[in-house]
Amino acid sequence: MIEANDLSKSYGPIEALRGVSFSVRPGEIVGLLGPNGAGKSTLIKILTGYLQPDRGSAVVDGLDVLTQRLLVQQRIGYLPENTPLYPDLSVQAYLKLMADLRSIPPADQPALISAAVRAAGLQDHLTRPIGQLSKGFRQRVGIAQAILHRPRLLILDEPTIGLDPTQIVEIRGLIRRLAQHSTVLFSTHILPEVEALCDRVIILMNGQVRADARLADLAQSGGDVLLVLQEEAPAAAAALQALPGVAKVRAERDGGRYPAFRLTPRQVNGQAADLGPAVFDLARQRGWPVRELRHERRTLETIFNELATQA
Ligand code: ATP
Image (cartoon, rainbow, N blue to C red; front, side):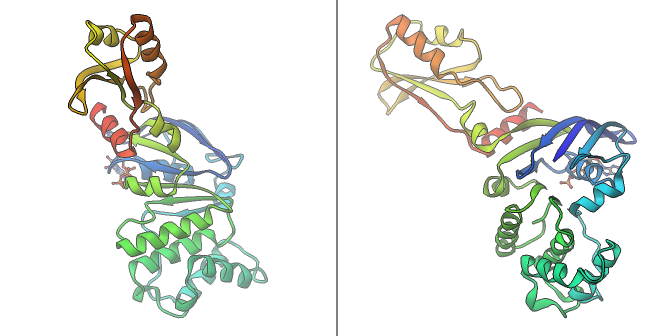
């Protein structure tokens, strides 16, 4: 559904994107996660045809974003960082205007507008001027305009920014419902948002993709491995440290009693090899009295912080 290939973009001396490549398959819900200034909005503006990259290419739903910009924009639903809403217009009048701007035939408009209104939960606010709505409801209006033409791909830039906790939960629920029928790519700097919604996460830092993985794989890969022994084994720490892919070995006491070694794997782009099998083989060869070998799962927060400190 999306193929981004080596995208780069600078604003004067600021390199906002540096060789960004990734793909999104149909039906996925993908979170684009990154700190402020990572390049998320720049990337989204390129994918939606609102900004030209300096280098690289992007294909959206089989169409080249650079050469088939208008066709791409007809196929996607886009919620920009600051949706241009008209405060004096009622919700209904605004959605009608957007339907006209999208060249939706008048005969099709009532059904499409009412479907978008229902999906966004705006039924009770149709006649209210947009300027009088809460921020959460204004965001829903932005989402309603994005889904008006039933796009197969939704691209949402920070959809929950500035909302209160209740509104955040509501908008997340809405995104989840929309994802049943569309592919969704949304940007955020809020980690729990990604954990709550996504199949996959792409972590962008300093204009580069630092991790691109399914959430389940990311959490399972690369966690520490803890080897707990019944009793001390001479030279175990040095032997463990010499295993390929091991970044660090720390001696501990498990349960305050048993000698243990915590092995941290070396990370490459947020992912790392599973050290378990190599540790198991080594312990067997050396005849160490193994009490337990266990994996520790990493949270997205741990991964994000590891990447941020490496950046
Ligand atoms: P945020 O979460 O704060 O919106 P972001 O990840 O969306 O950040 P971008 O808005 O893409 O990041 O910005 C990436 C970098 O490019 C930042 O350093 C930003 O200051 C810079 N930048 C963005 N737009 C412009 C512009 N029009 N002119 C100059 N610099 C810009």
